[in-house]
Amino acid sequence: MIALDRLSKAFGDLVAVDNVSLSVARGEVLGFLGPNGAGKSTTMKMIAGFLEPSSGNAMVSGFDVVASPVDVKKRIGYLPEGAPTYGDMTPRRFLDFIAQVRGFDGAERSRRVDEVVEKVILGEVMSQPIETLSKGFKRRVGLAQSMLHDPEVLILDEPTDGLDPNQKHHVRGLIQDMAHDKAIIVSTHILEEVEAVCSRAVIIAHGKILADGTPDELIARARNHNAVVVGVTSSGADKAAKTAVAVDGVETVETLSSTNGIDRLRILPKAGAAIVLSVGDAMKAADVDIREIFVEKGALDDVFRDVTMGGDGGQKGGENEHA
Image 1 (cartoon, rainbow, N blue to C red):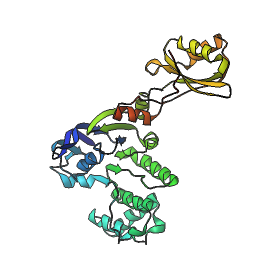
Image 2 (tube, rainbow, N blue to C red):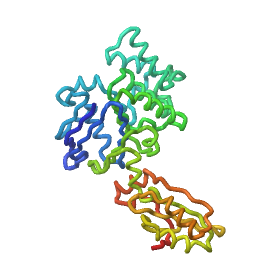
Image 3 (cartoon, rainbow, N blue to C red):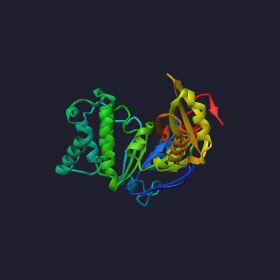
Image 4 (tube, helix red, strand yellow):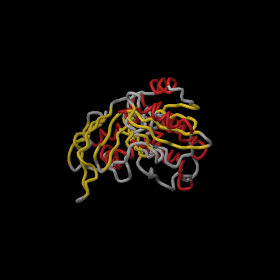
């Protein structure tokens, strides 16, 4: 549904998007991640036809965005950053105008407007000027216009920006409901949103794609993925650490905290290996007094920092480390 081939965009000497190749299939929700200035919005604007590529190609539903711009725009719904609208219009007038632009008349136009209003829950503000609405309602008006013509492809730039937690939950559910027959790109800085709604995630920085995989595949790159955290009595902490570090598949052991006579140790695996059973067995055999034990999944924000900044890719523990 979306195919980018060596897509690039330069503004003078600044290369905003650098040789990006990417495809998105029907049924996929792609989380498009990156720090500010990474090239996310520029890439989406090229897909939507708002910017012409400096080089490379972008195809939407088989149509080239430069050679067949109208065919692309018929098949695409675009929620840009900030969701610009006409502030003096009411949501009803604005959505009716968008429906006319999209070629709908009469009863069909009214039906489409009513349908998106219900989906994004705009009913209570339909007669207020858009400029008087809260940021969250303005965002929902922008989302409604992108969905009005039931497009095959949706490009959503920060769709939950300005929404309260209940509204975010609703919009995420709406995206999931639409995903089965559309290709959707969601740009967001809210990494929990990626885990909640996206089937795939791409991390971009300095205009280049640095990582591409499912959310679980990216989380597996976290330093503490499958790490085992154990709480033991402080008097037995050294014994526990020596026991753990001798287990096959263990990389190192670090102290997270020491409070009220209990030390919490993080046991890090080699290459994300599953070590909890072998660690537990070894601790039991060594008669270590375990007060708690759990496995860490890792966090997408740690991987994001690692990929985009060359960080450590995981949560840092305490200063004490057992080799």
